[in-house]
Image (cartoon, rainbow, N blue to C red; front, side, top):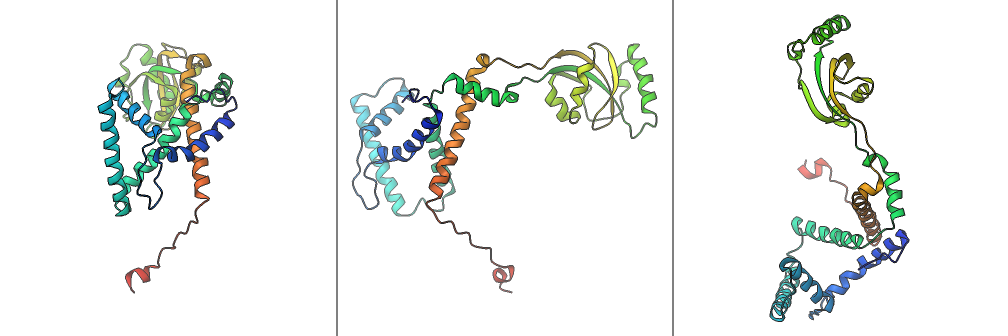
Length: 283
């Protein structure tokens, strides 16, 4: 199924919404309550054949196709009888699987959409930060505990002199949970480890030189950056496949929400208030 000929995404989504309500009827056929007839439609046969072909990389032969149909009839008979017996009620696993099937149906239909490049470019622009590659750094750090040191600035100056002279930085750091060296770590990860916006202080630092102190959520740090890869913004053409995947996921969520709200409007929802403690305990 190809909806590319429908250029307006909103029209495509409306068509998908209609399909979601119609497709179950196409496959089930003759499943009304009290109906003892099982109708195997051409749509169902084609679906069984397609599933077989995906698994075996070839279409089923006549006997194999008949076997698939017979197995489906057996499954349908037992399923209907199980529903009549109420075996599907209050079963969390079954409820979740049915919900998943509804969501997968929406996904399959959304995957059939081929949005115009302009639609994807607009999505890319609106979500530009999502596709930005943050700066990456390799660096070493020496921690100065400001709660234990009374003259942090002076201590930092003295330790910087020792570091510049080649002293092992691991012998100069105060005790802390952070590692001494970080390899090719993103600015986002640095901020999660050291505190909000700590990596912004790296922007003005030269590589290969001990500098500081820099303030983190824990205290002060002397830092030497070995390598720095600046923040990058890939062109749309480079990541078009990723943008399409994300756009489809967003479209699927929007369609599912719209479908849910439409279906929910057909129900009256009553939520019983919890009984008072005295009523539950009998006191």
